[in-house]
Length: 146
Image (cartoon, rainbow, N blue to C red; front, side, top):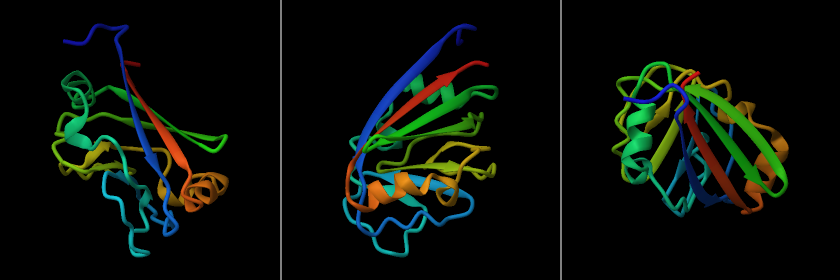
């Protein structure tokens, strides 16, 4: 059981790609895959060093609980965006390559959080430009009880 003051953090390193479009209205995604077609309009970064299944058991357990708040910080080329989402009891984080933040409550093995306050389309365009220039990005995940 998580203690009231418990906080669990994970860090993912990835990079942008020339085909990052970031136009999706309900999700955004990072992936361990290294290539990206222009059709992947929710994918904001590739070459991630961790996929959903690679996250620590403690972190995966934390975000699979109702009431957990996930704060995701995206940092690339001096630009930072913070996304607030929620954990959910149906989150499994078993996908080998992908992590998806969702505005909705749809769950699959790639879902890391629901009720996200940002989608690919809502991320700062300055951040997206850095990613389109294939710059490195650090993704910091902080799961905590409110």
